[in-house]
Image (cartoon, each protein chain N blue to C red):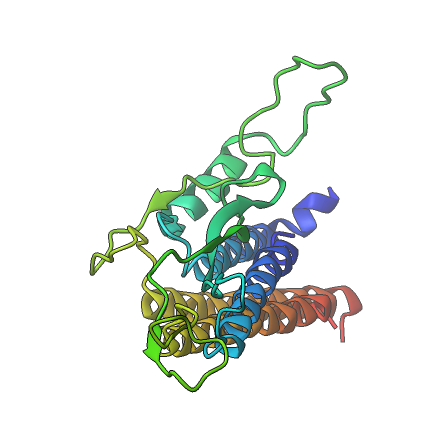
Length: 135
Length: 136
């Protein structure tokens, strides 16, 4: 019964989306982090999705996180001479996280998560109805 | 003899199987809504059902025994694997993904309702058969 495969397909998507949400959470948490004395600011992480066939069947296309990359955009520099971590010119280096981008990413991940949960719920209902066939 | 009794169920049985198959393909599309370069898939249900039921009637109801590898198995007796086709995108996207979430969700809901309809038809036929067997 191929409806059981729906759980594998949508389940893989749910775990991939939750990993994306996790990355967004860590980006947002570090959005205002200032680079320490080693002057290495936090770089925004991004997940890369890739199609993964369940049991090598092209009809069941699951998804997985192929890799987590770092965004190489320029870090933000803010003039704050009073900060103990400021450099000689009075600038502090902060992370390169774009908060608006991350919020959009978060909403998109949450919508996709919900869609896949809905799909699994529907598949569950259908299977339950199929079990009651003939009764 | 016994397959004569249940022959009337074959059509809706095949339809049910193909509906669940399509549900799986559409779930794959929904799962890959955010995957770059993914191309949405679907199959022609009408054609797939014709293939599944037409071949079943063409071949004899007697199944051939295949005891060794390489023995010919008549087509249509295995599980139906419909020919998958790429969906034509309504709008192009920057990451070359052709999944339109609205289209896929609508197709999935449509497929669900039709699956339930097939289930009901089957249920009705089974009830009719049981009534005939019990005779009351």
